[in-house]
Image (cartoon, rainbow, N blue to C red):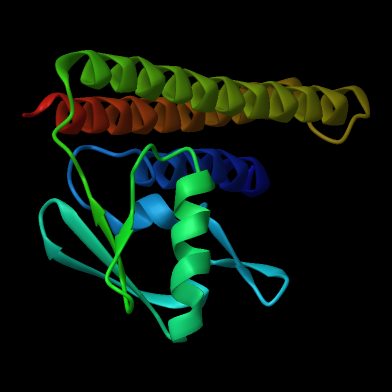
Length: 180
């Protein structure tokens, strides 16, 4: 049972990490988590090559530890799917986050709900696997019918708990996106 709960927790954490990379019109350093920079031929995470700071609510400043990496960082951001145009002052790359349009907010809200549904499907698939495991144990004579029913109840309670938590995440992120 603990293994399956751990898998459900991972599905929730994965969704949280994915939501952290969604742009809400405010500067958030986690938006750069998925971007890899070519660091001497090796794809490296942004935090591995630069210091990222937030000078104000709509600006991110990325200061590479090596001056010659400014162009590589800029190129990595331009080729990403962030939809942002970086500018550089020779030492740092600056990202300005424009205000999101109403259409873009609605589009992001739909995407957030879709990702939430995918996470709930993952949790339900884990529930199915856990139930199958319990039924196999019952058929093999390892546990009784009563124990099987108790385990299935525990599995269902864990599933309900994680689905509710995912719903809370979806609602919070949607509210964040829709707030002007």
